[in-house]
Structure formats: structure tokens, C-alpha cells
Image 1 (cartoon, helix red, strand yellow):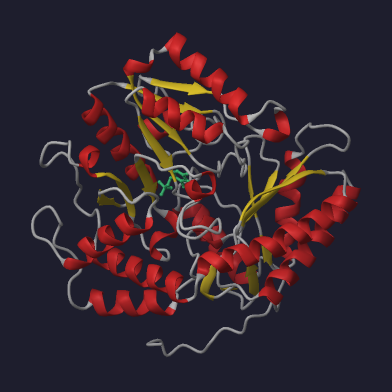
Image 2: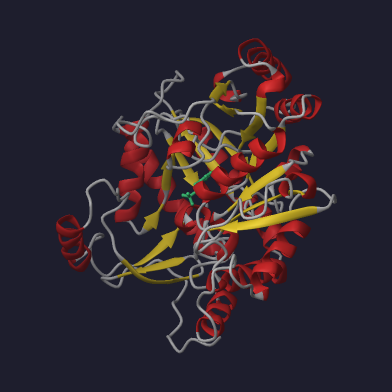
Length: 447
Ligand SMILES: *Cc1c(COP(=O)(O)O)cnc(C)c1O
């Protein structure tokens, strides 16, 4: 390790209330300096992190069950990421890859082409954010097919730029007051097992009927789906749904895009979540877990599709910045060396077992679902499927006060999602889940 900082003990330790006085002071400054439109899930400021711990500015050690929304899968400031960034940043911070190249960009593309589903010939292009990758995947699909129309699904999330807001299903907080959105976007049903008892094939058939009757298959450039819907609440589409949607795409010359920005890079116990259903997407979008926290995103896909765009049609000033690429190479190397794909499955075992035990005791938990280290519980009013969004919010707030960071999600805001760093120690994970269990039991009793 090239860092001289003392190691952070992997234990939950509170030395003040959370938030403490320094966080409170920073929150006040934040309020005066930062746009109110930028939200904050928790009124806490963090100074450092490592493994499964975030150390806040008041010296509290908080168990991290969110990984910055599935970004720091290798942990915050993972050693190989730090080393890669440090050695890169003193050599070359930027050239603009569209002007002159550097090899780390090519290496990241080679890695993406190797790791994403399918053994066909692939190409990649790098960008800065997930939304930008999604926008570019749509540009590529439109250029390749010469068609305009795009299909997204209910509960889907694809970003906050104009095009990706249009693709995103949920209004608040993502779309409210920000329209109109780009034309040519259509939404079809997704198989949401808890709230729809039809089989995956049946829901896909309904979606396909809708596409055929309302758009026409030959007008559709792309279908974009998250193989597990992230912001939508870790909805795992019923088996058969994704393959049927992909088959319709293939049969109709439609580019099938898997948005693996949240599910990718070992998170679900496979390199990519498409693998669980044997899906081989035409294009895959990645970001979040790719670079250990540095801004990087990519589109990877079939060489003929990726190369169909005119020269100069893709790019951006910063896309595939050398420092971000170095971070990605360090992050991917960490995943390989520590076998984080397997570790995600072990974490998934612990999460599922513990949360299922909790669900057996608490009738506010309607379902435990997800794959690997991407697991959620959906909270409802007991005996109904009525979403308990307030409860999820209260639990997350009470957990951080106890030194455990857990995120919410879901179209109805009633999902607690667990996305720990894949390097978290199992004892720490279990301790975090102890706290979540106690808090949830207490809050559910006050429903
Ligand atoms: C987070 C996310 C995005 C947007 O990524 P940004 O980097 O925030 O622009 C797109 N798609 C999915 C599935 C995501 O989870």
C-alpha cells in the first residue's frame, strides 16, 4: 500500500451522536453554498473510508451497506485503485482520447470486451457517467438501425439527463418539473413478481403485443432494460421475461441493451447480471462499480453495431480520462485477485438468510429479493401489498444514527436495498444486519 494513513479498524464505533457537531456544521455550510436541488440521504459528512467502514468527520465509524450506490464494490480507496491513480496522476492527467491516445483507455476496453457476456467480437467506448453511457448506447442503436423509437420498461431507471429522464419511469424526484422529454420513448410492462402473478413469458407477451400494435417492431431501434431493476427496487424480472424480450429484439432487428450500470462488475455474483438468465445483450452499459469511485462509464457491444457510427460521432472531452482508466484497471484487478464474484455470492447468502429470518418475524416485509450482493426487502402495511414508504425512510434514518448506512429504493420508496462493498468482513456485515433487524422491528411496531 502506498498510503501512509493509519488503517481504519473494521468495527462500528460511535464517539458522538450521528450526525455529530462537525457534520452539523458542514450541513449548515452546505445549505448556504450548495443548491437545494442536490439531495442528501443523510446529514453526515465523511472523511475517509476503507473496507466496510466509512469514518465520518466526527470520528464515528459507520458500517457501509450502500457502497455509494454500488460504486465502491472494491471498497473506498481500495489499494490498487489508489496506486493506479497515484502513479497515473503524476504522469498524465489528460490528453482527450479523441486527440491523442494512451494505453489505459485501450486496456479498459479490452477488459470490458473480455468480461461482458458473449464471446462475439466486441468494441467499447468510454464516457464519464452512467447517463452519458446510456445516451450513447441509444445514439449507437439509432445509427445502426436507422430507426428512431426506443422502448424502456416500467420501474426502469437510466439517469437524469433529458433523454435518460425520459427513459426513467419514476416521476419524483427524477422528472418532476423537468419536462418535456425527448420524443420516441415508449414504456412497456416488466414482470414484477411480488405485484404481478403472471409468468415472465406472459408479461413479455403483453409487452410485445404492445410494441407491435403501438409502435411496430420495424420502427424500434432499441429495447433497454436493467437485468435487475436497481432504483425501481431490486425487482428481479420473473424467469423467462428477459429471454423473451431479447428474442423479440433479435427477431425484429432491434438492438437489445442491458443497462448493467448498477448490476455490473461482480455485484450480483456474476460479472454481469445478464448471465443469470443466459442473456447475451447486443450492447451493455456500465459505470458505477467499474472504477472504484472515479467517474467512468462505458458502452460495450457487438463490433458491427459499435463500428456502425461515423468516425467522430462518439466521444466527449473527458470520456475515458487516464486517471479514471487507471482506477478501473486497479478495480478490475482487485475483483479478479480477490474473486469478488464469488464473494458477492457469499455476501448474498448472508444477506438472504438473515433477511429471510427477519421476514419470518416481521409481517411488514413482503419479500426478500435480489441476487448476490444486491439484495432488498420490500416493506408493506401488514397483510396488504400497500407500500410502506415512510417506514423505509424511518428505518434508514434510525440506522445511520446507530452507525449503519442503508439505502432505500423503489418506485414507491418502500424498499431497503443492501449493496455492501464486496470486501466487507462478514462479521461487520452481520453486525450491520443486527442493527437493521433491531431498528426495523422497533419501527415496524410503531407503524
Ligand atoms: C445509476 C444508474 C444510471 C445513471 O448513472 P449516473 O452515473 O448516475 O449517470 C443509469 N442506469 C442505471 C441502471 C443506474 O443504476
